[in-house]
Length: 385
Image (tube, rainbow, N blue to C red; front, side, top):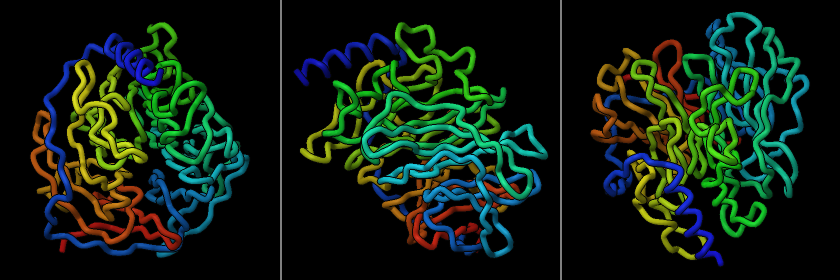
């Protein structure tokens, strides 16, 4: 029965997506070390920081998985009250996750955050929004709630990225590893189900509604908010301001972490196409290449556990301009991924941080910043040596 269901899923997926297949990649391990840089500690003291965003006045906001928000004040982090925040589910990988600020606001900035809500048996990723008046975030309301509910504390995503027309991309994880199930399906099979938000990138309006013109909205049974699907658990998402390309990094199982170039309507294959292996059996999950599914630009084996993704446009490291920087939890590093003009990966190198890196962003001053995933989380600035 399980084998038959996988064949049905594969057939449906191939019928839904006509994007060209790419040749099988050679997976890459840890790249060689980068030179000419050092990390300096800006501040420390946040428990399990998760996401960061700069206000128009230059101040930095950072979320904590524990359900709190902080603003950088010199060398310390001050708490910001969150008035009306729903109860945060912090089991497993759940918590208060990413943060993004409305790009059109200069004062009374609208603050968007993703978070896990619910219980051990019924939870989901939601998008909330409030207004920052300089001292507190108030009027927080839930704009979007991913469906269907799932159980357990795995694979919530979630990252946010604005597109230039004012729509918001939001990643949602597939719901968890086997034997976790959602309804009659393994949770991971939700990533091939267009009637489910799980395992996809959504494109929403600033009010949290499905954005007009989403490429899969006309498909029978498809949720109108889905932008791309076939994802396992995206925790890195960024847009190149020059080319407009959208990039995502996502966790694979036991190897097979991926860097993907995201196109609206694309099926990125999970769990039918993967470079990873099942945690329980050690057997490959799916095939490495499936016709009609989008191949990754990078497949990392072993898994660095990518989290946080930035495209560098600053002037402090001219040789790094146009490169992607991917944080690594298990790898405890930042991977620099050099690209050519056609978005092909030229080479990689690593910045060894020695701590779990949860997020990487470029600040308004043109430096790269990273936050470490630990009880005494640190904010790091990458500077020339």
